[in-house]
Image (cartoon, rainbow over the protein chains, first blue to last red):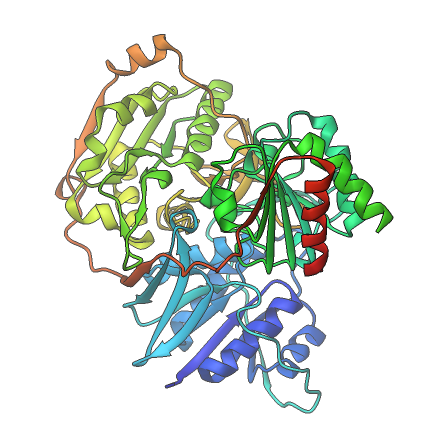
Length: 314
Length: 255
């Protein structure tokens, strides 16, 4: 596989930075990281695989990371890297789009695979609500791509790695957005992607009170509870963080137990990498049965209490 | 505050057929308004209802845009008028071309304070057009916006990120991409649908908004359905204790 000369990476979290640096090492000859934060964080990026750090300094309390877009755009114009890898967070999406507009290109978004072929970067990402994957390449000088978590495995930290840190002057943003308040999201953080077992619910659940039963089963199984979009954004019985599917989370659990879920592609794409899929649905014709390892055609309200009892006494 | 809400027409996912060679067929697909764009239209209506001003809807694409049912569907949700930019190459426009075209159209419409986009299109879901468009317009640009409150000649917005919430004061002009849960889009009644047919629709070609054929920034190599993961498909029928027990044993085997 041929290599790209200069790969740049931009991430919000250390975990993502580590993965993108590893990806950069795999695809390119030289890896540069754009770092916001303390000098220690800049040095850490070197240990994670970067050769050169463009250090933007600490983000001021009255600023948001997006205020650095102009600063980064100016760096891109000056240094002309061929590839920029960005974490696919909400901020990453906004910054990548704005940078692409400045550079006259489009972003290869949510790449689940990225390769270098004939000196070109090709990326694969999901389209049409999971019905297909599209492989695409960019025709402009720079390729900007957001990379899904897990596509590249982080390298072990190497305290002996040497690199260069370049402090970058801040370019004032063209438009000033004023921060009134920054706060942490309320409620316990849900991390469905880390769960080994997930119980998913759909419109086959009739009442909000029934969620208690689902939670009881999930508790007995050592599972997290997830749901389809209508449950999170229609009747709002569960928070949005628990919504599995195209515009929600994408999972890869060992076990997915689907209760009252019909199996529409927009939802299934979020779980079809599960090792085992088990489903319960009263509709014999529900498409989910074709995508299940084990299925039961029956009334979830009869099945649930029995399953809870079994798992509790197991 | 004059508002433009952008939307994309997309093929109905359920009508897309995966062919033997794993390519997709759209031949039998109905077209619809992208479902996340319905939130954008509703958000636009609420801004204008709160601050006064006019809401226009805007879309770009190929001749599928002419579908009168879709035009009515957009206008029945409240916008006063509709602008369409139609060109064969816009049917498969990438994010860069889409944003450049929307920018030119918005400048031709003129006097626009707020542009609202959905979180992403429901077919390609790149979530990039709002970001690119805002940058091209030189507007204050934000995504993940879950609440918009007009405040004099500014907007106060709430932005919901992965773990944080930001409350921001945004100057105009602004280009905002809204979350899928910012609102519950209104359902048009018969009266609104009848009235929609009488609202003005302006249709432009690319030369009319000052654009020539633009170079492509991306090239599609393939679009293929994923290879199906083989599933055992052991399906039981019935909800007696005995059957549930069999299901339970099956689950246990896999844990």
